[in-house]
Image (tube, rainbow, N blue to C red; front, side):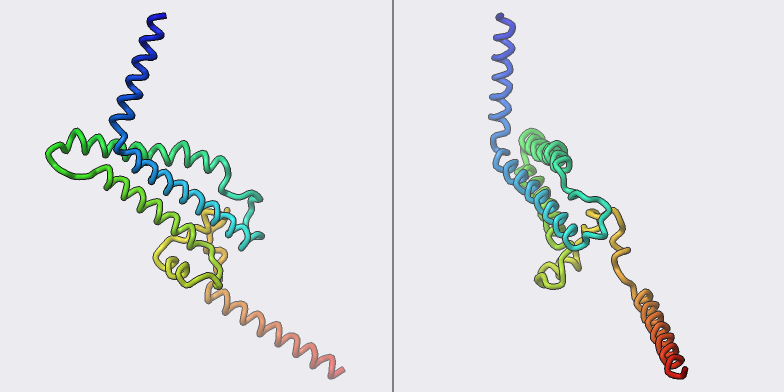
Length: 188
């Protein structure tokens, strides 16, 4: 019985030390988690827009953003980001003792920038021409993530000038055949 009691006391002491040691990082962690969750939400919104805009182009019937994808965000993305913040804090506190460099803040800022950029890419992707000029302007400098939500390459959805010219030639040929057929019918 004494061993269990000692183990619980040691465990409580360890938890208390962890809370006291890393308490300055809690606000940073909360902000980073909020940004990661917003990025996941924007990916979900992009998936809904892509499905609505190209319903016949998708080969899958469900949204790409599933509970499995969200579970991956919770199990992989958030812990990876938190470990970076905690390691930066430890390096700031124990390694760079004589230098005043806020590594935990810098690491958090980089993580926030990455997540905000990804959310802006998600929000600007798969927009219609009626949407605001702001989203179209962002598409000039950001990656269009629409093809990630399809099982095909996005280039397959775009029409090239060569394809347009081929269609014009086909229409001219069809129009010419139609006129000759009418002329033959009138001549008979």
